Image 1 (cartoon, rainbow, N blue to C red):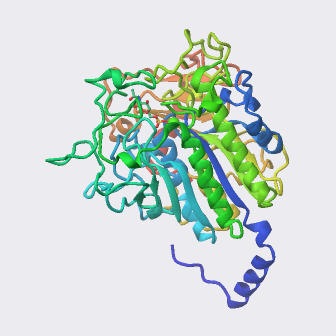
Image 2: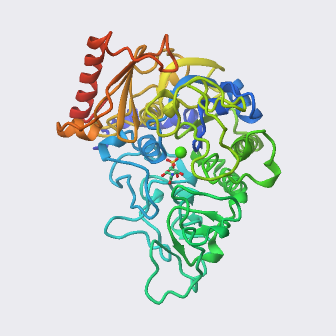
Amino acid sequence: PPPMKKHPITLLILITTATLELAAEQPNVVLIYGDDVGYGDVGAYGSKMIPTPNIDRLAAEGLVFTDGHCQASTCTPSRFSLLTGIYAFRHGIGILPPGAPLTVPTDILTLPKVFQKAGYTTAIVGKWHLGLGTEQSPADWNAEVKPGPLEVGFDKCFLLPSTNDRVPCVYLDNHTVVNLDPSDPLYIGTPPENFNGSTYPDGKINRNAMTYYESSKGHDNSIINGIGRIGYMFGGKTALWNDEEMADEFVVRMREYIAEKKDEPFFLFFSSQDIHVPRTPHPRFHGTTGLGYRGDAMVQFDWSTGEIMKTLEEHGLTENTIVIFSSDNGPTYDNGYLDGSEPKKAGLPGDADDRGHFGAGPYRGGKSSIYEGGTRVPFIVRWPARIKPGTSDALVSQTDLLASFAALLEVELAEDEAPDSRNILPALLGEDKTGLPFMIEEARGKIALREGPWKYIHDESPKLAKSGRKKKNADPAELYNLDDDVAETTNLLEENPEVASKMKDLIQSLIDTGRTR
Ligand code: NG6
Ligand code: CA
């Protein structure tokens, strides 16, 4: 966008007031993002079996949203929308395989770029899973790995490049693999000819090498640290991460970053691997719940959250830092690893599993699902300087953080920037109790619309809806009234064809116009 023309005197006044009000106008922002953490996995949201005192304290001191959402019920699409303010389906974004290229275009506005424009320094510590390198020039793990976070708005990154169940099992510090020995170069997929570096057992041939715990369902390629992964890895032995120390590693990096940047406004995206599989909580957390490694990993994530709050406190930053706590999609239990987390019988929507835990709270479905359990996640905003503690039923989405922070920081959005991100700042501050008038939810080829009490699940994938083609054997459309039926048990489509048809039209127009804002 062209720079705003300002009268020199106005500019002078702006600069003077900006300096005076710096502390109030440029709060630090820390986004604490869980992986596969469900609505019901946090004490403040009703979890009885997983102690989460640090997150609960955040909740007691902040605003707890009961209807807060990630964009989609899987990781990559949710993160894509969070960072770009664009619905993932518009770019055909799904869960990325190991070695996938960067999905976020380098030439568009992103959430971290909004902060940069407002004079912030920005960083991501933790899981990325938005791809690295390009189609033409895939990531070369033995050279500078780019483009990635640094090319889309982060000044600094310390990354788990993909997911903890995917290769490569190494950290990236800015553009460089940490602790890589050049004499044992790192490759994923297939090694070059005459490769003679380190090799790892192949789970398809050597299941006995799964010494940490057994896995199936695709988690049986390279076995690293006794754990089967998705994808094959060769070389890079000295660079391998330690799964049980991953949370500690990210906390160390978080501490370093905050200590270094405490005197300038910063945006820190703390993107935890917890509680995604393979769940490998540090042994000091073993048995802290009766729910296996899944529950124990959640206790570990609560510990990380507490360390972040402690670090802010140590530097006197708690008052004027906005801390947001949320997750990238709803809960899943087993997901391919025999880690003792799967209940013997999963409950009906809104039921506890046989151990008494409600991973999705009262909601139906979870990870990958189009029902509320897929995207309705913990969503807490704490900002003592501006936000009164309490609970809000306002409908809010992570996709709207971009436009909301742009509004807070007075960064102007051009017409074509972040087209699906809406300014919901009043709701985030607790001043507006309603939030979004309508909201799109996404799940693996499915799309739904929330509007007032209604939820409509479209019978066509957004891709097909766009092309005008019809899918054979598509699931029938569904309509629920969430005011009366939070668990989405009774399809009211036949009784309310006019509601359904209006909502279907709104979805189609959102697809056709390419924008929400
Ligand atoms: C799936 C994996 C699952 C998880 C998911 C991505 C199998 C059978 N399952 O394909 O384990 O990695 O992808 O999770 O391979 S997410 O939170 O990053 O979306
Ligand atoms: Ca996830």
